[in-house]
Length: 61
Image (tube, rainbow, N blue to C red; front, side, top):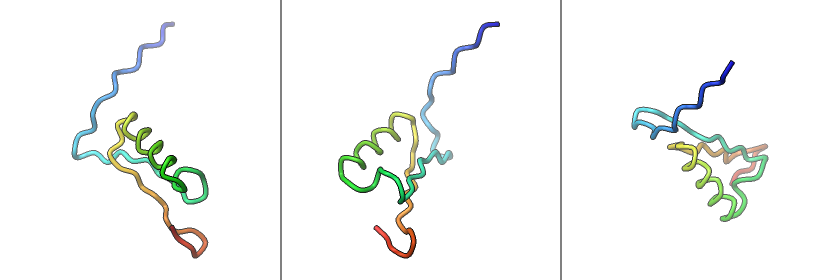
């Protein structure tokens, strides 16, 4: 049995909310380089939002 090819990536419509969740416990929010990498990854996968957790255990970024 042959596996069908994946459909090409489509641009999200304005009505869609496609987001990355970035938690405050892992990497991704600590340096400008990490943030640049995160934004590039979101753009590459046609995400249109980044939801960043900024509070954890009573502290915040």
